[in-house]
Image (cartoon, rainbow, N blue to C red; front, side):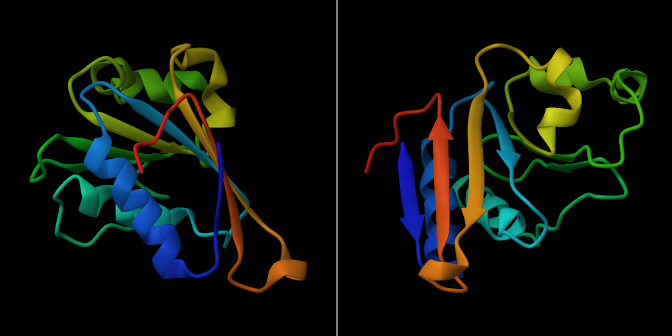
Length: 145
């Protein structure tokens, strides 16, 4: 499925819709270049899960946990992962195979440990269509609109 958004609010709202429909144990991978809107999208997912506290990218902590929503939300940023052993040290399998919702930025860096039933989300810019335009490609999920 491909969804186009034309401003940050629309990108946030798409994330929010996904968060509202998220189910326990789902794993979302979020791919896209720096500055493409991954954090805005993730903030929408968190809001859709009922999380009201600030959500920022956990670049230096690898994972940020949010427990206040209707489901636990685990936001990973694995950009700084040197090797898979680091993921084992933080106990990734407890998160990946638990009852919460995982969202993993830069997931292509840990592909070998991801389950086969992930939901892949890619955000792309196209400056010819405008500075705030985003093409969002979702694979593995049928979104209820």
